[in-house]
Image (cartoon, rainbow, N blue to C red):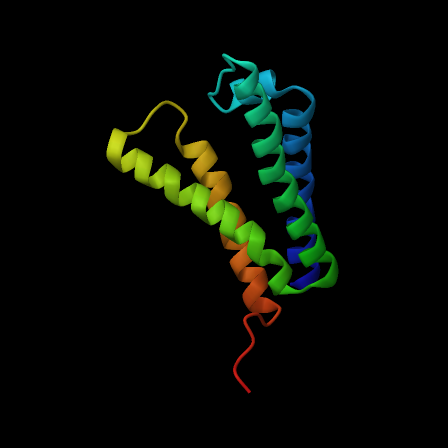
Length: 129
């Protein structure tokens, strides 16, 4: 079970690293994949900086958590993807569904589920002594 969780987390880390690198190298193309368009240099800078940070922090958190098999290392990734999922959920309720809305939410939910399973399997949070 631990090896499988580590493998899934590392695969997700690689996926997030690839997505983050896409935003770093070509924010216009990567942004278009997310339904975003660049209209100013400020927007390009925001996509390049913020989206790269989101995915790189997640990738590092997942990779270190999987490598060390420590749930506390996974908390940043859980926070980022949990908040992203919550924001999308609120948007679906407030504005209604749009074409393709389920795919990003499924990816975010999958991240969260795997992270929570790993955190609980690896004993975090630890019970009070």
